[in-house]
Every structure is written in C-alpha cells, then in structure tokens.
Image (cartoon, rainbow, N blue to C red; front, side, top):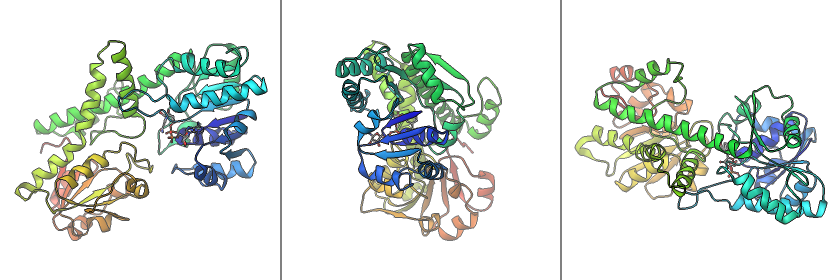
Length: 441
Ligand SMILES: NC(=O)c1ccc[n+]([C@@H]2O[C@H](COP(=O)([O-])OP(=O)(O)OC[C@H]3O[C@@H](n4cnc5c(N)ncnc54)[C@H](O)[C@@H]3O)[C@@H](O)[C@H]2O)c1
C-alpha cells in the first residue's frame, strides 16, 4: 500500500519503517529538516534497538523516503497516519495544535486532488478528537464528506520506547477505531501479516482505550511506589512483596517495580490531559490525581535516603554521582525523566553532580545546565571520588557494576538504589552503605 506518515518521531518513524518492512511503500514527512536528512541517510534520529537496520533495508529496497514536503506525502499516499506530538499545555490539557495543523494540510490537498484517501490518527488524543476535531477540519478544508470523500479512523499506538520495533511488529493487540466498513478493510490491509488480536471499535473508544491503558499502568506503578514507601516504614522489603503479589495472575508481575517514579513523553502528559478533561466534565478523578501526585513526589525519596545516609554532613559541596539520565533504559528520551528533578534538587542543595548515561547525555544537556553539573561518559568516571551515588536509570551498564568499583573509586561507598537492582545483603556484606527505595532494613 502507499502509506504516508506525518511526524517522524518515535511513533511515526517506527510505524513507517515497520510498515515498509512488510512491503508497503512508505513516505514520511516531518517539519524538522535534520530529522529528514538523517532518515534518508539511514540513521534514525532517535535511538531504538533494530531501527537503523530496518530503516537501511527499507531505503535500499526503495520502500521508504522521507521529506519535509508534507504536501507531497499527502498527495502520494492512499493511507495517511497522523503521528505528530500531542504535548500538554501549561494547564495540563492536550495541545491540539499539531494534530489540527496536520488535518488542515490533509484537507487542503484532498480538496485539490479529489481522490479517496484514508486518514488515520495515531497520535494519542483525547477521546472524541478524531470524530469531533480531525474529521470536521478535513471536511471543512476539503469540501468532502467523511466516509464518502475520505475515510477516517483512529489507531492508537502502544509501543514502548526502548523496545519500540519489537512492540510494533509483535503487538499484544491492534486497536482500530473506525465508523465504516471500507475504512476498516483498508486498515486491515495495512496490518496484513501482523499476528495479533484485532480490536475493532469506534474511534472515540479507540482513543479511550489508549488513555485507560496508559493511566492504568501509571497508576499501577504509583500504587507500588506508595507500597514501597510504606514497606520502608514497616521495616519490610518491597522487592519480595511485589514478587509475591505479582504471582497472583489477576495482578501480574509486570509494571510493579518500585522506584523513583515514571517519566517519559506519555504517562505524565496523558494522565494530566485526562485529569483536565475530567475536571471539565465535573468529575474529580481522585485516583488519577493521586497517581500523579505520588509520582511527582517519588524522585525526592532518593534524596531523602541520601540525606539520611550522609547525616550531619548534608549535601553542600558533596560530589554526587548520578547513574542514568534517560527516563528509562535503552532510549535517549529525556522528556519528564526523574533524573531532572533529582539533579535540580541536588544542585539546589549545593551538591556537585557528576552524571552519566550511555546515550542520553546530549539530550540531557538541553535540559540541565549548571556550573556544578558535569557530564561524564562512564560510570567509572562518575564514581571517582564521589561522596555518594544515586542509581537513577536501570541501564544494564549500571545494574551489574562490580562491587570494587564502588569501594575503590568512591570517597565513601554510599549507594542509593533508586531502582532496587542490587542485592542489598551482598552489597552491605562487602562494605557498601546501601539504601534502596522500599527497603526498611
Ligand atoms: N513516544 C512513545 O513512546 C509513544 C507511544 C505511544 C503513543 N505515543 C503518542 O504518539 C504521538 C507522537 O509521539 P512521539 O513520541 O512520536 O512524538 P515526537 O515528538 O517524538 O514526534 C512528533 C514529530 O511530529 C513532527 N511534526 C509536528 N508537526 C508536524 C506537521 N505539521 N507536519 C509534519 N510533522 C510534524 C515533529 O517535528 C516531531 O518530529 C503522541 O501523541 C504520543 O502521545 C507516543
């Protein structure tokens, strides 16, 4: 099929490259020329395992082309996926600007071309956006009627950054939100060759499925972070608690690791957008608010443990190593990463911070800048002469460090394990002053 992608970020590029890997002809558009240059040279502007290889073979097979000419992509595609960002506005509501701009563009081209195309919203959008915003904008700009002049659908994306290619190619389910059979059939052709349950619903339900999934996952983590904070007070250990609780198949062991909270481009903004909308409906979503509040406080648990361990010495002029900057491992995405509030608070309290990450340092520099903040390229350098260390992102590079590196490099071997990755008994036996989230002994 001739597929067009508008917006080549995490979702757009992965969608485009993966659909090309299935033999479709894909045109990708973005407004950022550097991204387009990089894609056409075979290098993904984002870090995702396996993406460069698939991109390069799509380019070699002439199945993918990227351009800043959005009109060209719309003109030459039969199915167009809108994959632009839907960030938060300052009041927490969803910013419709990019989706609306894409819809206007599509409408203008449809007016000139008068050819039936299917428009699919893949961006995460507040329920009702596809039917009540995107459809009417395209109708107004093109003079065509939805269903007759063009097809309209919503296809939420559930990929996880870090394993995005795998998630896209082997999804748990594909949700297709459509109002007519023709659009449904065309969407099923796009996903030909995918082995997954297909859930066919109306567009608004498709949008709601995405919000319900994301806000549930965010709430699940916040719940276990609250349990972790309580476990510490009860002098118990959250790791064994979650392990046993997760053995209950009704609960599942996934997504319950206690730590310093979630970040990234999706959970925070999606929960805020749904909260904002629920307030407009006059509903106070207490559970969602609590999940957000718990999460916002959680990074500071690491600082509390650090201060307790440093005791009277306080943080002023202490050299603190921060291991990991990205919001999670295997990505360079720094959006709403817990490392940001942690580093900012350390700096505010007078500490000198030496931070490292395998791939997110350049992104981090765009968000963190202070005379007492230094970025280094290895854990070894970060730990050298450090008064304490905080494990922030559970990159495998940092979760299996030999004990000697803490003992020999650091001024004092204090490890605050923000992700509960180390065996605390072993660490303490070896002389590490270990503190972990949710560990009360
Ligand atoms: N990142 C994820 O893990 C993930 C997972 C599932 C769903 N989503 C959702 O998918 C959507 C996109 O997320 P993302 O992380 O890929 O965003 P992103 O910010 O990485 O990418 C969006 C891209 O759209 C481009 N763009 C903006 N306006 C444009 C226009 N008018 N024409 C062409 N390009 C335009 C931007 O330049 C940018 O490259 C969001 O709604 C997000 O919530 C994201």
